[in-house]
Image (cartoon, rainbow, N blue to C red; front, side, top):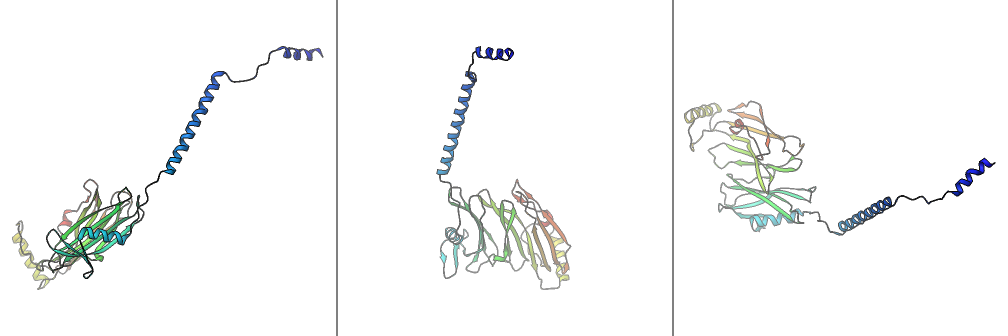
Length: 307
């Protein structure tokens, strides 16, 4: 029994101290707790500030009101009698302008985006026509900004709705392919041209122009017209100037197709020829127009330019 009592007596004689961390560790713990508390207060204050600070409202567009306002600013007074805007161009010709296409894109980063085209021709029956392409979008300050371009061409008729195609060219770029018909001179073939336009750096840029159709019906057989044209071509080869070009039987078409959008670079455009020339089917062929980001234009092959 003494063996059991002896350790107990020894333990009773030893001094006992309460367990606690060394003094330097207590200071570290206090500093950490203070820092955590300060960060928590900072986050609470930031959350309160962000919640209390009013953000920019998403800009919405009333199409009818915006178009009416922009058309008035660009073309002048609306004529209820003529149902259009009477626009006096830089050439001192008066055009009757009407909207022929409009599209609102509601999923812009800051709000709605509006694209529309207006066109008109000489009210006095001259061979002058004009169209305007417009882009209205949020200005980043709870308001709207707009860019437009006005393009004149020789024709007796304005651009019609079926001549305007609104296209997605990339993931973040929309634009138009607009057909214009040059029929001002009855002595020449009637040529229809495709013009590709899109917003770029605060303006409406022309990305490409290529032929869409050509029509000519000579007052003689296709064989006789071709012989006359061949003789003229041989004689005038290499000459420059304004010559009367003999008509040849021509009913060619150049259709286009845009590739599927996939990325931020505007997609290629494939142009395909069809129809007849000199009364015979033309050779089936295609051209692929590739976009050049540096110039912000499509490269047009030389042999397509010469069609």
